[in-house]
Amino acid sequence: MRLAIYPGTFDPITLGHLDIIERAAGLFDRLVVSVSLSSPKTPLFSMEERLAMLGEVLVAYPNTSADSFTGLTVKYAQKSGAQALIRGLRAISDFENEFMMALTNKKLVPSVETIFLMTRAEFSFISSSAVKEVAFYGGYVCDMVPPAVEKMLRSKYGGPKG
Image 1 (tube, rainbow, N blue to C red):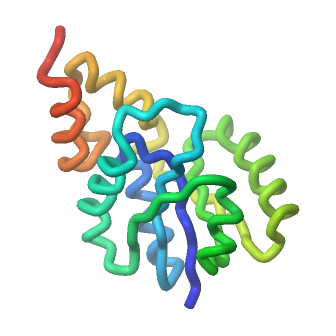
Image 2: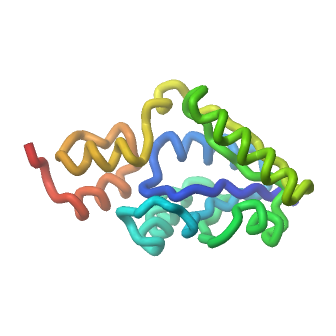
Image 3: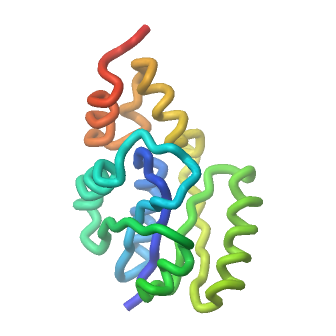
């Protein structure tokens, strides 16, 4: 069975993430979308909330599941029996950091490959940080996140502020 891990903070999950999930799920027998708890970022949503959001949106992809982990991503992938890590790229600016991370991961665990998938152009401007800022100020995020996520953002931030 070909297993891949798609790691990230997913704070929150966006339509760009879903684009990557959909395509990666088509390439592998099983895809685990894993929330990283070892991030220097301070998340808006708790790990439980992020896993709940993932659980809602992953229903559409039967060969996917949600999980969480701490520590090195590549070590988690190795322990999970994954053959690959999926990394999404939005723009050329993402590539340098992702490339260095992939080389480091390959040095640490040679058996795990890194596969880069470019998000579709219509999602290339979406980042979780931008989504949170737009939602904070009451802006329209329906074309950036799944409905379940939009609802969670509104519960955190309330209605329009400006």
